[in-house]
Every structure is written in C-alpha cells, then in structure tokens.
Amino acid sequence: RVLVATDVAARGIDVDLVSHVINYDVPEVPEDYVHRIGRTGRAGNKGRAITLLTVADEHTMRAIERLTGQSVERVLLPDFGGTLSAAKNPTKKIEPGKKKTFRSFGRRRSR
Image 1 (cartoon, one colour):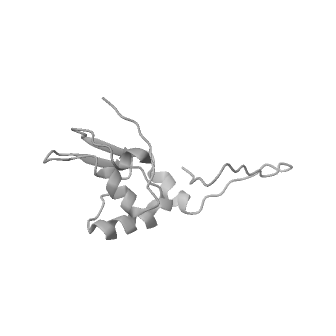
Image 2: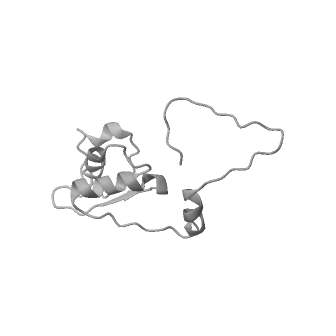
C-alpha cells in the first residue's frame, strides 16, 4: 500500500505501520521535516525516511541536522554525479533572437 500526501499529512494523522516516508522536497521549516519523518518507525517499529535534495537544499538540510542533533546521510545517486558540480553554477544558453521568458504562479523552488 502507498499513501501519497501533502504536508497536511505531516501533523495529526496517525497511520499505523508506516515503513517509509519519501520527501520529494526538503521542507523550508526544519520542524516540518521532523513532523514528516515522524510518521515512520512508530511504536518500536523500524522505518526509513528518504529525502530527495539538490545542492540548493543543502543549507536547509544542515539546519535540520542542527535541530535534530543528528547527521543525515547523503547518497549520490548513480548517473547524477556529473550534474552535481554543474548545478552549483547552472547556465542556460538562449538562442539568438529569442527572449528569455518568466512565468510565475507563486513561489516555487526549482527541481
């Protein structure tokens, strides 16, 4: 069984036997991370929390580590190693004669 949820499920929902929590993004508030991963490994059961993060998330992840007093293991996924250093200084070429356009539908972090 799989449950896909928004941050609404981070607090106040009691689901038995959650073995894994997968965060597609790092919450902007470190305390929210604690509530998200707190859904797993309850009542003496084992659980695992996996969080997908980018270089841009590193500052927030360090804040989470300071809050929890625990280090969070980072695993570089295969086939992504070549993009890690490029992500620090991304560049995008725009074809001559074309303008760069921006669309905004509210605040959103890039993935």
